Image 1 (cartoon, rainbow, N blue to C red):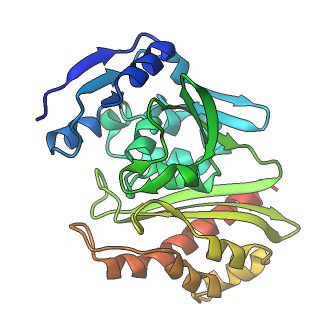
Image 2: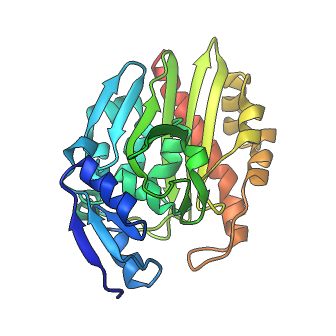
Length: 295
């Protein structure tokens, strides 16, 4: 394992000053990604900055029109949060699916985002929920849509000296619902072979808006814009009729064009391509059912 120095950040200002001084550093919180990646030689930091004491980054709160989640919030906390379960159900389900209670109690949402694994479970849920990220540095702060933050496997749009402070989920009025599902090779402690998350808004029996995200099916977690366009404006009863008839709607064929799965140790690209549409259909159906309950 690579040898590195360890710095414990006292507060957010100390963290940002340290990042500015040492661009070769890595932030570490729960260390559930940090330890295996450093051990495998994929990360070779000269300095690790421990941010676990930064209470400024540890919160779940609702503000005007937004559900705001600090980057140090753990998967366990998100899975058990009443407001996340109520307003961002897909994220609560995704976080509950991660590993086991011990890992969920340490792994942070910020760490999951910054590791930028295409197989991450919480990321498709946040993408489907329309997340924006608040990034901070000594130069100030900026807001970035999550889809612009993920730029490749293990790569993000973080600039030198920048840290992820907050995940901001829009709270939409009206009849909305969301859901998340993963497919793994076993029931527990499984890295996703494929996963899907959907968020829908319905108005007058029609799908007024929809976001569909898939993981483990492309170099990054991806939205499915072509499928979203195909579904937007459709009648809910027509989608439900397709499901009852076990028929593939045109939008499911489009889903396959929004992905680029590969072969790896967990599954073949061909298998992933076959399961993408059923996963997407199930999540859209689940989100529609939940939106109808909210009418």
